[in-house]
Length: 416
Image 1 (cartoon, one colour):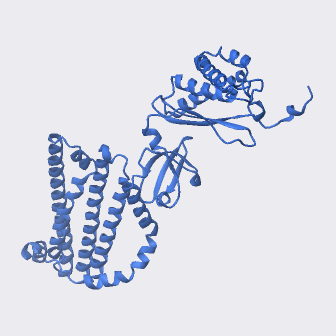
Image 2 (cartoon, one colour):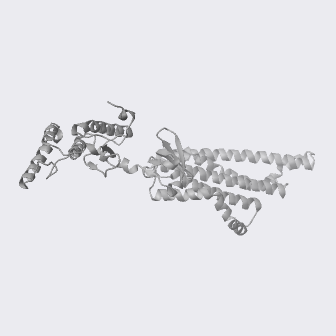
Image 3 (cartoon, rainbow, N blue to C red):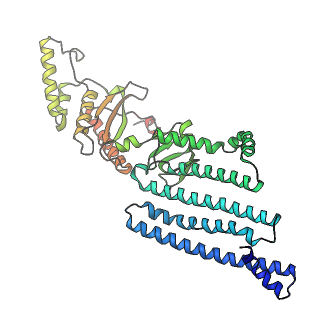
């Protein structure tokens, strides 16, 4: 091998070329030859690996092979063997240039080797990320966070290898030194560590998935989660703006996840009508007679009137005073009307709770709250259904001789 490495030198010296010139010309010739050989080997291995991977991917039913090819894993691996051969050929190329130059180039090639290995690891991790995202059970998991953590760990290991190679330091001495710098490293990567821990907790506790609708007022977020990575969670708001939330904020702060509503069979309607206190009263026979014209509660009123009259007669109640005995009130009948109306509404889920309840009186009157669930959970349809229901109920209030409360305005003080 030494004879081959001096072949050009021997030829030049035999033709009366000076020693110093012959050495440099021999070096240039060796560099050219080795470069051509390494380039050819790199080209052949790259084509061979790519062809092999492609054929295997076509025969395989798994998508992982195609993803590996798309992320250029085979091409990056192909560079490792030519680089290894270059390192092995270096002593023969620099046979006449030992010591400083050889050591510098050797270390440079080794550093390139570390970077190349990191590049291979990066392409493999990216392929794994893309593959996991195609699996339904991982579609809503923060895969980006985990891949970023592994990549950071790989870069740290690569950085350690580079320092060891360049400075020719023993492993024991190096790790003893790096141990003392742990506090600084933790300080530098504080947000990364917090984000990593938070992303693990978010994933294990299933707090947030990609595609979830979340609301976080502190950060002005109200929309769908589009990305969860190591440091941030991206939320596309309903006005198409993007809000970025620190991942660890999902652990430290409060937020609302609407997934339960989305996965349920209905979306809740919970809103109250405020009835004026002075408009609430007992119903007289004339009032009942008029209300019986309302079809959906006609049978109910007839039955209730019979039951109440039987009770009052049996107990010899003095009905000259309406307060005595059992009576129907206009707000009670209206409450029954609301329940009956909701149960007959085509957009309301009948298998979930339907209720019209009276809350404690306030300075704005008596709240009559409607509690039900719409079948359609889409926002625009949900709003339409709720508006349609309350349009009807607000218009129905006067039929029961009730009034809705509203704050006084300028027209309230005008004389009629």
